[in-house]
Structures are given as C-alpha cells and as structure tokens.
Image (cartoon, rainbow, N blue to C red; front, side, top):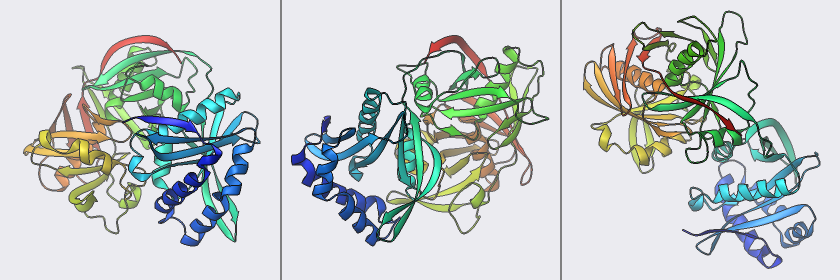
Length: 446
C-alpha cells in the first residue's frame, strides 16, 4: 500500500465535496438527522466556500491518497486563541480507516501547527460519534470541554472539544522498567519528581522502537485523600488513561518499596476505579485485593437491558457468548475450546471497540482445563494482546465461576506465566497473587 498526503488545489474542490458527502453519510447517519446532514454538506462543502477557504491565509487543506485513490482529507486553521491550531475537518473513507490514513493526516496538522508556532491542536467532535472519539483518543487527544453549537438552519449539535499538545519542549525523566508475567510497564516516580506528560509523550515513552517500550505507563503520585498511601495512575501505550491494571498493581507495590517511598509491605492505593490494597508476600509474590466484581450493565458500562451472566454479542458476521464484568475496568469474557487457535487477533479489535461497550472493553478468551485451572489470552483495550492481564485474569475467573465451570481458587495460565485468583462469590472481593519483577532503571529525554 502506498500512502501519499498532498495539498488540496482548487481543481480538487469538486472531488473533495463528493468525498465529503460519502463520508458524512456513513459517519453521521445514526447520530443526526438526514436534514442536518444535508444542511451541513450544502453549507460547508459547496464549491465557492471551499475555494474561499483554500485562499485564506493561515488555513491549510490536505488530502490523502492510497495507491492513487483519494480516500480522505483534512483542513486546519489558526484558532482565535493564541498558540492553538484547529483541526476543522478530518474525514477518511470507512474502508480506509484502519490503514494509517487518519494518523498521517493528523501528523500533517501537527506539522502545520508547529510551523506556525502553536503548542496545541484542538478539534470538535459530535458526542454521539463514539468511533471518532475513540480514534482521536488513540492519537493523543483528550476531552477538554462540552459545547452546544448552533450550526444554523434551526439545527444544533452537541460536541466535545478535544485537544492535544504538539509542542516539542523536552524534559529528562527517571523511570524503572518492570513486568508482571511479561505484561510490561514503565514506572514513574511522581512523588520525588514532577511528571506531567502529554498523550504524545506517553506514546513516545511506550513506543518499542523509539522509546522505552511497554504495554502501560504507571505513575506513582502522592495520595489525594486521607487513609491512602499513594495515588496510582495507568496510561496505555496509546496515551489514553485507564481505570485499572492488576499486573501493574503488583509492580506498583514492589516499586514504591524498592524506591524507599514506603517501608510497608501492604499499602492502600487510590485508582480511578476505587481503592486497592496490594501486599508483598514473604515468598516474593504480591497479592492484591482487586475489589468486588461488577455485573450490572450500566456500571460496566455495557449496553444491555438485562444483567444475565451470559449474553450474545455480534462480532462481525458471527455471534459469540460473553460474560460482561468490570474489575474496575470493563471486560468481555468468552469461553473457547482452545486459546491457541482462538481468533484473538481477528475478534479482539472488534470486541474492544464494539458499540455496546461505550468506553471500549478488554476482550478475554478463556479455556477451561479443570475445576481449578484455566488458560487465558486477553486483547487489552488500548494495548492489543499482552502476555498477561491481571484484571483480565480476575474477570475470567469470576466469569468462569459465575457460569459454574470452575471453583475457587483458580490457577490462570497466561502466555507470560501463572496467576492465582481466589473469589468467594457475589459481594466478595477478588484476590490475585503473582510475581512482579524490576528489569532495569534509566533516564529518558522526552
């Protein structure tokens, strides 16, 4: 595949307008009315307006071609806010949205912004366009505010304003590289050094070719509430912040102990999803109280009128039976005959971004070995398949017990090693025990 980004010329205006109509119809048909779609297309993509925008100073238009076919375009302009460039339009044909086209167009907008001396790239996206919001989050954008926009013609749209940093200022940062069964982390001490990283810096840190490389970045911060020892923040390698990470929790307690931040063997840690209590055991393993699992769809969150333990989910052209459960983060667990041949690479991404999981989901594939042992693979939200997933192991055991397939305690075999999970049933917390290893420490310039 040959991907090329070119500036839009006046002779391209009619083709851009036609492409916009095709893409808008696909992206917004289920979000706004057809009358709104037609109004926006007529107002924003008529030839005189497009030609006028092309001629404006501080306004850039680019288009993407794949193997010579025009498949997407963007426009961006300098914002009224000093230091900001606005990504005004970015559209890619649906069948080309997984080929890196959107990322290449965003990179062009970043380049325009940097050339103009801007440090922030902003955009507006309709609140109902979950697919676009998730895609922008993967490219380092975060929601800054909600706005209601009067688009004229008696129509209004409810949008999110999203932003990402594009400045190239650098900083030196000390870190430790750790892993729990091959699920690897870059761990940062935010107690003794100031750590405020942009999504782009987080992605660079997690990049296995140009950074340190990891599945997640873990940040230790001072406690923000009484009765708690530390705050624990987790960022996926795509730069997005998530609620919970079980393997990371084990590494967290070992890190703060090894770094001399505490002399306690058991600590209380604040996460986005609540308080957890990891404990260093005498044998070198770490046990974590992962909290009580949640099955209520609205709390996972999972779009379903019922809270049945097993529910059907359409994945592409076939149906799978899943158990939806939250361990502080959402999981969709299915039972398979053999994890080695399970369609993790094919079905995992589709389940992760399934519209019935509005915050995306971790996709688990479990194979029952006996009443006290399972095998597991997990396609993690924002990270892809990892060698092990602590919350995924907890969710899989909870799902298997709830289905009557196994009994506590359960040995979970992952591609990175073994975890031991115990759960006493509804209303009781899940206990996870496994290793946490420090690989090396270093310093990186971001």
